[in-house]
Each structure stands twice: as structure tokens, then as C-alpha cells.
Image 1 (tube, rainbow, N blue to C red):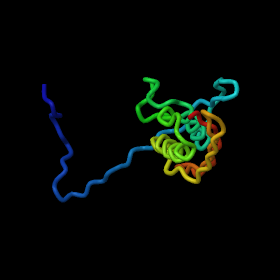
Image 2: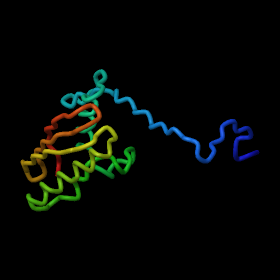
Image 3: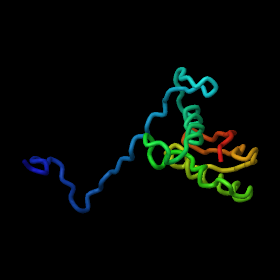
Image 4: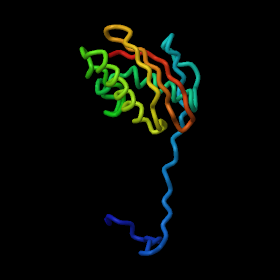
Length: 142
């Protein structure tokens, strides 16, 4: 049993131009989640699928569920008990880090953060993606 193919038809020689193809983008179509009822109803695609992914990432505690990769979720438990000024800067950094793990997102900017309770913050920001820009308004647990 050989470790390499027996008949190689294509050989690349030094000096020959090689074309490199970029990986095909993954489809974004997914199930539509109704967050009020907690039910799945239909499908979403494009910017709507991305918005749903953003909300899901921000509601999922990072490192808490073995079903998700280590890059998925929001690390809110790291900032418990900190001052309001520290919370605002860290929330921005943690949200940016969590969302940039998604290949479709190219930038996260224009943050507005208000601490609304002992463990809650209202956040608004703009996400630039391969589908265009979208504004996000949500609350996160801190």
C-alpha cells in the first residue's frame, strides 16, 4: 500500500504560474428562530440570518457548552463585579471579539453602551458584513 497516488498526471514545475482558488463562501440560509416564542418557523438568509447569528452569539456564554467551538459565544462572566467604566470598555472588546469569529462579519463599530442593571447592559452597534451594514440593538447579561 502506497502513501502517495501511483499515477500523478499533473506535475507543477518551478517557474510555472499556479492559480490559487479561494474557498467558496458557505451558504447563510438557516432556520428562523422566533425569540419570543422560542420556536423555529421557516428559514432566513443573508442579512437576516446574520442578525439571528449575532443575537445567538451574544446570548451564548462562551466556553460553557461543549457543543460549540471555543471561539463561539460571549465571555460575560469575566467582567462580573467591575466598575461601570471598565464594563463599558470590556463589553465593547468582548462583543467585537465574539462577532469577528464569524467569517461573514468584517467590522463591529459605533458602540453605545448603557448599564441598565446590576447584570444587564443595553448595547447598540453597527456590524459591517459581506451582506452590508446593519444596526444591532440588544441587551446582554454581564
